[in-house]
Length: 440
Ligand SMILES: Cc1cc2nc3c(=O)[nH]c(=O)nc-3n(C[C@H](O)[C@H](O)[C@H](O)COP(=O)(O)O)c2cc1C
Image (cartoon, rainbow, N blue to C red):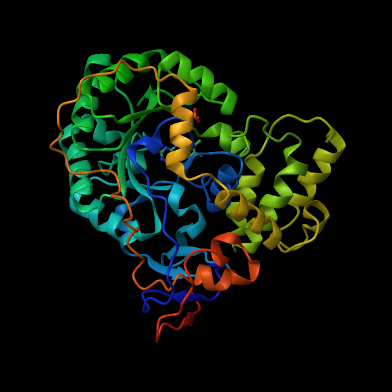
């Protein structure tokens, strides 16, 4: 494992954190989101997606049992939080993404799903259940797309998560279409009744492959159906969206509240911007690699993600592309890449990302603005008074703190002189709240 020395949490709570802008069901509307992607949805990709306009980011699916056996550690230099297994980090996150970060669980057991969610809930804004992965490693254990044919279990997991999570943690699900629309609607109805805040529909069936065109034309009926249930749940389209501009087309076609992008973002994490970067090897990759090194992202994972980048070339000619690939492929680690990444350390790139994320308007304002700017494609329905538990954050509620995290992110990054760190709540160490350092 390549991770640096880490502070071990739980240690006594040391610092006061700023208040977080909690997710409400409205935050799943009018957005373009980064899809969950194993490997490709690594922390640097999520940060760059946020920098370039993604409204929310999903993490790669993590199986419940894996997270239960992981040890949480915080890098005092950067604030990166790692959930470490025996030989590697199962997943990493950073406090700066927390208000926008949805953690996706793979599970086939309500009790395990709840235990896993409890482990990570202090570091995330929401929990999503993967009900769409068609790969045998997922389905043979009853997870992923296997849940589509076991709606009792699927809904039991969502119900258990909703009951166990505090209201400020959203619960959502990502499904695929069932072969018949009637069965899909029946399933959707049950899912919506569990109290989820949002439902993502990957518009392919379990047997369809990525190369098969997504069946987006089936989504409008689902969107209308959910609207007719009157619970205000967001329906998120997923499948074949290439970027921010294309998301508008998909919303027009489907009526979906929001759109989620996977492969488009894997190829170019700046696709969330109305003006995505081109010549990406020159414009985005160097910064991506610098940030990855600064955040101690695993080199193999970094190289994999960077090698997935592709897109339009304007000034970066064939010879430059070839040279870039040779340098990238010729190195076994971060060293030796100066020629394509320029000066290290990545701290400035990271500071820029943090500043851009921090500069976002409060989410409720953004949602309200988008709501007035864009007509919502659903019919208003008289809403029955709801008996459900609240799924939005009561005003002035602060997310629960990590168990004694001591928020070393705040301490370690004070030298960056960022507004999020210098303004607002004072960063006051709690008596006895030192940072113990452990090598993992
Ligand atoms: C590399 C990769 C990894 C993926 N991992 C996950 C995952 O962890 N969880 C999940 O629900 N879907 C996963 N997916 C599926 C995507 O989230 C998405 O549903 C699918 O790619 C369709 O979206 P797209 O057409 O925008 O690519 C993955 C897809 C790719 C390409």
